[in-house]
Length: 269
Image (cartoon, rainbow, N blue to C red; front, side):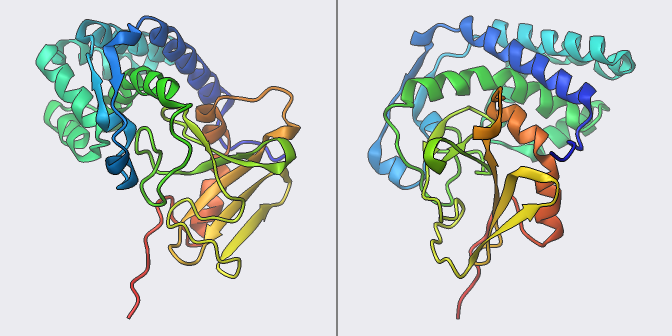
């Protein structure tokens, strides 16, 4: 099998973060999350999380940010100067804003926040997203048995994350997995998750030399791609987040071939 381009150290860090998120999720009151699955809205592509009433515990969110910081610094002490003032920047009002902007995947807000406060661009969104995910994952658990399909182009039916990872399970069934909220859903074997294209002439598969468990499904209708991993050959199956990370070499190959993580329907005359 091809060696992952992600260092073992970073993979280990991500395993620690996933473990933290699993622990944090247990600290949440299930009654603080109340999904309202409006079928008309969902058919229009609105993710379930946007239709869910959530009572965020701001003190817990701030505590989790501190725990992430501690984990990062323990793993890499050189990060301490970069993370040392994060706690002083976060009050209740700012934390609420972080939650809102992470929820809506507003990358621009976090870039501006980092620039305004003189910190590296990756830090605010990484921290906010990491601490938000237990809420999204709890939503996914609550609606897993109630949502059975995705609207092409709308991303994950629960959190709206662009689709990018599928696994082949028993009998070769294709199951999409969201690395963000961990929701999963069945998909047609020959279907673009971005635009819904099912034309076998415009959907292709790129195999990776030295990687017998992976391939890339690409669509010439929207120039999008998804990664497909055959987990039947795995002794231990990693979470969708770790599977996405370990298969980042597939992203590089797809993008080198001119395909995009988010497909765009081409204009027709």
